[in-house]
Length: 189
Image 1 (tube, rainbow, N blue to C red):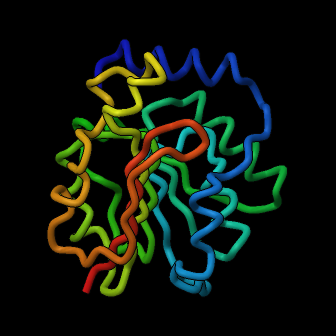
Image 2 (cartoon, rainbow, N blue to C red; image 1 turned 180 degrees about the horizontal axis):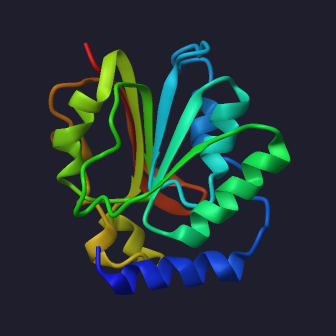
């Protein structure tokens, strides 16, 4: 990721400010399917930005690491965690240049961040039985919306083929809240 990308995300988080954002409705819908957390259950929020999903997971008992390129986003995550009475481990990292934080993780969530080489890293970062929850818009989204750009979109039907070494538990692709997305839940055997 370029320095320009970091600046872009910092600016986006500054403009959003400390507005509390709800966790993903997709993630919340999976609550019964996710691994049951215990004191040592670790989760990783890839490109987790302001921590909206990480705080939700921490409130359920996960020890959550948020990995993101934006220090401004991570500051918002820290503030959201404090307001919710939970703690997060925050890692400022450029995932296009550096490896994922050390696992193993019982759960990895990655929403709206596309860096295809990460799919090779996900299986080794997951604990046996661990789950990957992934959501990303596809090119079909451009039929209704000019953003995100093609660079940040999956090809239609591509996501299933990117997941190697994991068992697909749930896969869906379609229009959700006026965005065309590919959504996946996969488990490490």
